Length: 85
Length: 332
View 1 (cartoon, each protein chain N blue to C red):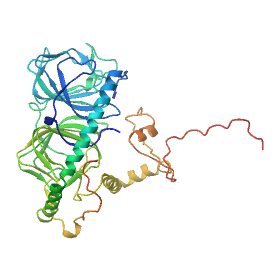
View 2: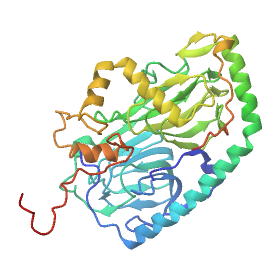
View 3: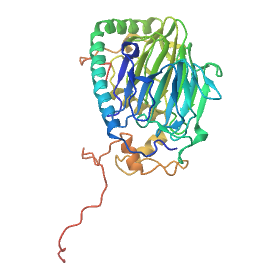
């Protein structure tokens, strides 16, 4: 299947792409900052999730639930908790 | 780099901009959702002004269009909300009009947006692949047929399926009070836009109407919840498999390694055969008899980001012939 028909990319198009790439970079930085600010709430959500999978269960497949024993619950590593990469 | 991880982004927070790319008629506005800075491939929310007219024409790359509000019409047909177009490169569409305006999602998969006036197809166009379907009127919801599956209450309508890569575009919904307590990641990039409704993910919080993400492979998302229901459009760039787990802190590198390890468990013979081809860590790409013209396997492997080395830790790109020595060889 043909993905792209060969064509010349004009200077105008290149300039447009460059401008959009700069704006996307700024958008990405804002997302990272916003997600960093969400960290305290996220830590609480994670604690609640780890509690729920021990009491109500973890969705193994569809609605099939498995209660995870405390011994299997992962421990928070020392490294920084990142969600945007 | 290709597209960065854009998650979450809400397009309601930014204004529309005029589309100024050459070829596109006046009266088209857009919000950039994500952009591949190497190829120009991108996803946009687009708005056509009242009275917009686009002459017959084609694009150099494939284009997907999903109408969210308003309508587009040709001389013969009206395309209302829920209509999905997949237009292969070079396939021309007749004049399109938006007498009362229209808002849509627009996706270019392999190159920058382009529009060339033409009342006929390009010689390379594959018109038989043109897809136009009204997903609201003509299709039913089905459960997700991926195993392991999402919890009950997440339903899909598959709009397009690429049989080669298994990439697909789909409408999905979450019913009110949907929840799913696991963390997921995929081997593919995943993208979605909320047409209506708010859902929640443990990493990113609430994603409301107008919410969007482009998520590269192996990035954790979930647990999931939705209070009042959500309608969204999703896309992948290859096969979607739900790698479920419950470690909130695993990294994309750890997730990828786990995925590879799981393939070894699921398909040990195939895994070993692939690994052993070439006798070293060479990115061998087996031939697919259905696609004999796929090109140089080595180049394909690199295009897919598969590095290789010869056990010395160095990444060798080419197996070129050694340069010939200048001057005469000494006779022995």
